[in-house]
Image (tube, rainbow, N blue to C red; front, side, top):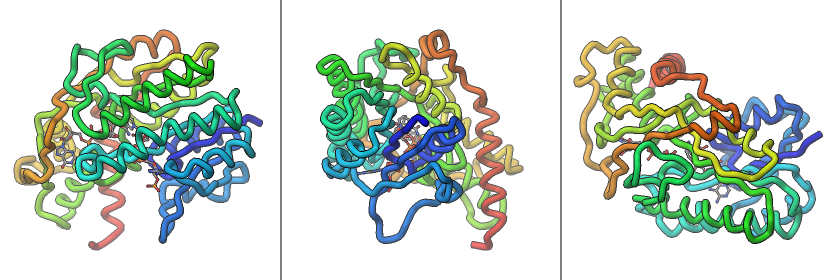
Length: 325
Ligand code: NAP
Ligand code: F7E
């Protein structure tokens, strides 16, 4: 039985990846942080799975990474843990650097010392392209990050490349564009809109407060993207890949379509601008060139932009109609 170790298992991607690997017959170990109240909502349905084991640890604590990796001797390690919210990286830049950048080195050191044959996946991000140098963005596009988060991810990307080249480790970096789902954190714009619009429709709130409607993202469905992570570790050679749909849409389009799906006639009545959600430095437009992934991994997205909006808004209408507040 293959063994996988996932950091960030309680997050959006970690929960889908755990499901995916359990379905493939893996034994899955997930790193979770100690918190005063448990936040296992996304993995609650998996908790009693006979092949899932949760391990307590933190990206800032070297021993809590090295010890389980030494004991488990995993075939694959997926480093998905991070402070992943771009906006929060301006108010907590040092913490973001510690988790999202140096945390990667800690995981790589744990592997190098305790289980050097493990295959390693690093969750890199299209935010590294930031103020883009070319359009669309591929594996060779130079980075120009625009937030402390983006800067931290650039570090995580290059330290992964460096360990691959220095120690001949099977270490790869997946440069993933935005991917969403009903399990997305409420603070991210797609889930915030889907949820807000559902609440407006049900009369629970008057409007959704948002920042910049003009920025454009290449949005895909998270379930498709965890398969790409796994595929990268099944290759003969460790290589980095860009993963995205190749289509960009604006926040405004996401809002307009969400209102339509919820049955709100005039989207402008459901929205209010709040400058608190504008960013000190914006990433205006990201769009992937996923040609390499299509050709070498045989990967392509299965859910279109329209389908994504529909599935997210419907999930929120269902969720919100179950409670009165
Ligand atoms: P997410 O929902 O925010 O999940 C982040 C996970 O990291 C959570 O399980 C969180 O645990 C854990 N974590 C945070 N700090 C930690 C620490 N110090 N030690 C241990 N665990 C820690 O993020 P996601 O959307 O699933 O994204 C997964 C990864 O892909 C992240 O690295 C993100 O930066 C990257 N990424 C995401 C996207 C996207 O569009 N979703 C695109 C490109 C790259 P708690 O539950 O305890 O907070
Ligand atoms: O913002 C605009 C905002 O926070 C998208 C993370 O998973 O993807 C994600 O980062 C856009 C930005 O995602 C609001 O200014 C307008 O232009 O949903 P977001 P993100 O910053 O693209 C990358 C690939 C990652 O790696 C990250 O981990 O939407 N926007 N109004 C807003 N954004 C938010 N959050 N809230 C608003 O009210």
